[in-house]
Amino acid sequence: MIELNAFMSELKGYAGQTHKLKDHYEKLSESEKKLVMDAAPERLDSPEEIFHPVFRWLENLQNELDVKDGK
Image 1 (tube, one colour):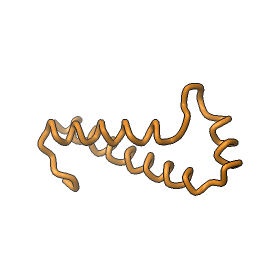
Image 2: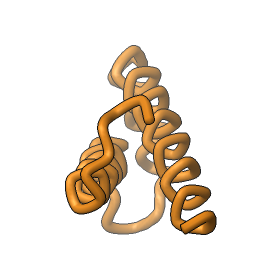
Image 3: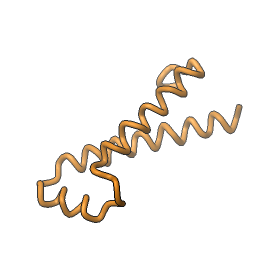
């Protein structure tokens, strides 16, 4: 269970980082967004493609383990 808790902690931190990344991306000008996305890996259209699945993964695990946010 210790490793699972460590994984959950890291996933929660990763989710927070993807949220910050998405927020900063949204503040870019259109030309800056284009520059960023031109440098992105193939098949990645925006940071939202990272943000939403990570939060869904975290929420699914929290629901599965009956973990309340903040614990």
